[in-house]
Length: 451
Image (tube, rainbow, N blue to C red; front, side, top):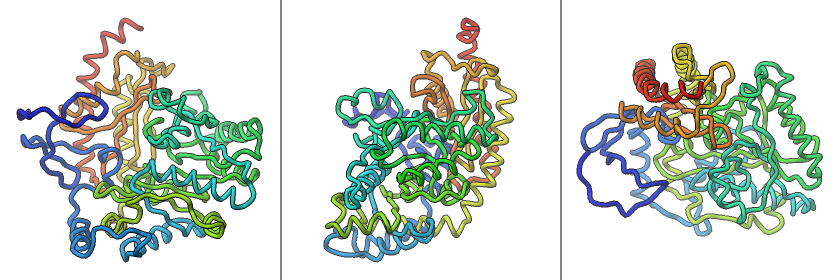
């Protein structure tokens, strides 16, 4: 690695990484010329791949006109166009778009709009937002309050108002059949139990990832789950908020993951693939019936300086145009099936893989110590971190977390850009195979001791 001066940046730790030189399509190069295949789209962000010429051209054109126009001073063509394109792609009635700079801001905005709607409609007693555990909804204190992931939330518990949680529908860990609608009802009915326990009149909303993100590793809900959740929310007058920050804009093979079940939420939050890494951008999309009472009562008491930034919105417009032009939702569906089949092939060869799951190109596999009991690997191995490093050294970028509350249950997310081809998948699987062989050689002694 090229010698470098000390860094004045800090993030999660002290480990240094190579310096990025350039990125094209699904590949990235460091300044030493080493090539990496971006097998996780960054953090499941770069849906259309890197350095797309049409997006860069749209950004240059907007930069020549204006890079900033404060929303209280001007409307901009870019923000109006992106709002229109977004509303056209979301369910009927969800016509109001509020721009933000990222997923945490989108979640925070949805919670605050929901609360202001309740107050504006004479339901001020509603303030609790139910979510699931494990789950991840963002890093702000409001978003962390509905996140179920102890390593990220525990230090800040004294600073947050606790919100009720229900178990995520991890059927595979509970020995239940995810294809049986009874299983879906079993987990969905936990929502109703929580509502009744907390008091239905106090519940404002249920925040749900249609397909689990990093906290549960691409967890697909059991049959009937999403439909039953929608019914329960309707029964008790509770808002259903779909966290599509990771799943939206084609990642699962549909523009929105909720489309797989024909479920219409009351609000949608998006980011990541929405601008595909070209600029910070996200959105909250809400039903007219929620926004109108709030505006009638004096307006939405919330906002961000960069909301609706014309440069960001111009990039967002170009990204959505590329998703359509290249048919990337369909490609995610088709290539996701190919990649998932190949990951299942690796599971058949490596008993350390206990589960492969996901939809479209939001896929993951989970490490286990025993493929029959699905007992997790010893947590001290830090397998989720070690495997990512091995793969990185082999030129493959993947993403990892821990499934079981963030404490154990190591999983690896394999989520390449939606432009991926079968040739790219061959490369991904070849590097995964090599990395698994090396990883097994390291962990087998520890597994022998615990057997």
